[in-house]
Image (cartoon, rainbow, N blue to C red; front, top):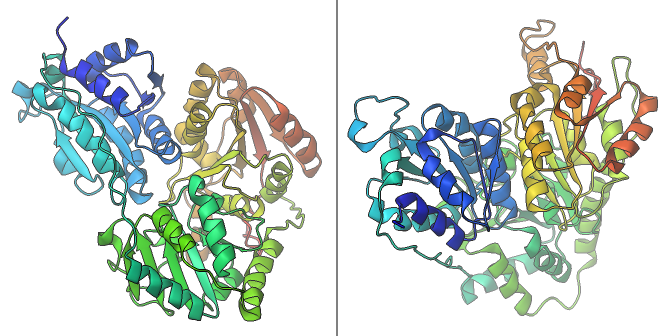
Length: 550
């Protein structure tokens, strides 16, 4: 049987350990689907919208330790997936997107659904590989997976003209290239450890280049050197939240008191965090371009060090390699009382914020009450996904996370990612608790992926903060134009009836008395569950400064 470029491509995926491919079927890559059908080690997950497929691949790229894989058809399929490509870029998440293209002889004629993907994705993709030769398909696959994972991880696009996929190919299957692993030089490591030893109020900011599997290294490092640890935006699971050295999460809507306290530090060790607007509270901590305190930046990609923030010491190193090297060096014989007081001060502040004081409202259930109750049922290895919206501050503030589990969210704050990411989590980590949080606005952007959860047997627990509004935008609107609501009010369907139509168990929390029994029933169910929470619009987030006028 003649091997086609599509056959070689799928063989290349298998060689790179790809076991799950997310996509929406399209005629521009039918030969790939046919080849996957003959590959027992690989599953193709058929989704209901390319944005959902892309979000699933992004989540898989975070959890699997290798690039996630998404396949979409040309033109409309590609543009639908663009939100996920942007999510991967903003979140430094490795993903490979295979996108169909018109036949080679038709290119340049504005053929049906033709796009110039190099122009379209040059701003958000690490690389766009336009495959024109069937005999180079194996090379293209290997390069895509290497580039997606190397340096600052991100999305890579592979463009596949339809006739190329059907064509015979003599291309070999190129095996995966092991990533080059960087480590600190001995003199740089010595300088960092000396600065840590001299500091009175140091703090570690741990970010996305670290993974839960590295958490034990970070914990030993923090304990041995007497360091408080704050976790970066959307990554609270990187350090045990109940550990006495945990100092909180630097993410969206951080409490003013926590931000003020960490800004009182006299040394910031940025470990595995690229740094961005969201991760630094609008370039405030660390302050850009010159931080208020000395900053040490350790990140695998040297191009990110000093790009915006001036660092006193910059080391291009895999953060796990840095931690391994630091743990081999002599540690302090003891931690000074001042340092212990600093650690205790930060941890106590975080723990006091974490406790939920029950609030009631006249316009619905305060969503924090639901989140707090879920926390009593959450296992340490659970996967939590959270969409964008002010309700998410309850999720980050009042749940405790652990490196045995995951928190997945979109770093750039887009809506619609939570449910698809939860489906991907259930497929990648079967048997885990998977809890998704959504606003009513975000749910209808990708809610059809409930059908994907049913089709593939993922028992996700989905909780909706239904305040009948684009709440975050409404809050900004009230701040800029008080009393002049425009465009943010929503008329929603019956979400419980919608759930039932998908074959999902639908439940509703209408008042405070429903919270405990409904959450208990939802978390105990062995099938997908959707819980519609009639949420307060006035008390929509965890700031507790003042309710929003409604």
